[in-house]
Image (tube, rainbow, N blue to C red):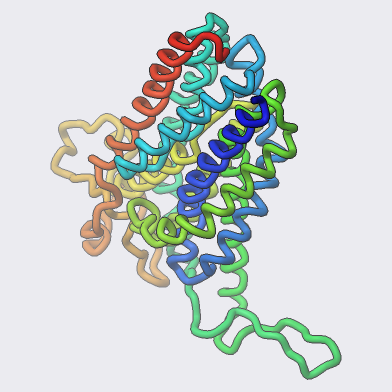
Length: 393
């Protein structure tokens, strides 16, 4: 009987990991794939390696929180399988609505529902986690705002990320041993920027592993029956499988957010979101990489758009400056080559102010709604289930 339940749990873990791989790989590598810098197969392979590294290192702190700290009793095998079911259900609902799934928040909600039903919820831990869920979007927005107002325009003027025709590197076989050399159209600048893009992608993959591997692995660890390493390997393989299959479409259609902005802006978003997520994972806070990503995008757009007015005017929106509109789409505009970025408080060139919208406000509302609906739904459903079937706890 135990072996059967464990097998069901592993299948559920694979399902959760598979869907995580589909969404996380697209968010992590979509901009680079779209720019022609990385091939989809390469992206999926590198994603799998760094997801495993993130899960085996920083991710174990999150796993400890999910397994031991949210409730005051060990998570049994049967309860772990039920939790995985509610995580999978949360992923399904998010996919139906077409938004990135807040997997970490859904996982916490399911375990919290178990704790409420059994009277074993650790309220101090839940309060700390929820407080970080409130603070993280604010942090992402303001870091993005600072980047958009003061950093991005200058970097955008100086840095150009382009992909030339032909291979990036070739192998010179004239000697006894093949040696790498620049491709026929490759410049040292292109090689350097490509290397940076790949490193940032690896960093974001590591961050995705740190935050997402525990969601698929933690419910089966410890009392549930699996060793940590075994559970991480299963979750990694499932995420990798998702990266090689359904993520191929996601990497094409990730254009809902990141591909609507230049690759350089996307790299700023990736570094910021990954750093926030990795830092919180290090202290054991289950956090959604999507949350930091979306709010950093919004922040960069706001910061870039408010350059024509002062910071005080942007924050207070004084009536004296109401006629100076804030255009959300200015991040998509390129600075004129060789021309300094306009100082803060001066109007931007007309081509900047006519950029396409950076984000759809309705879409942002939909994402934020899922951050509330996802964990709330998994909490309520898990609570009802464990109340109805108390013997599972």
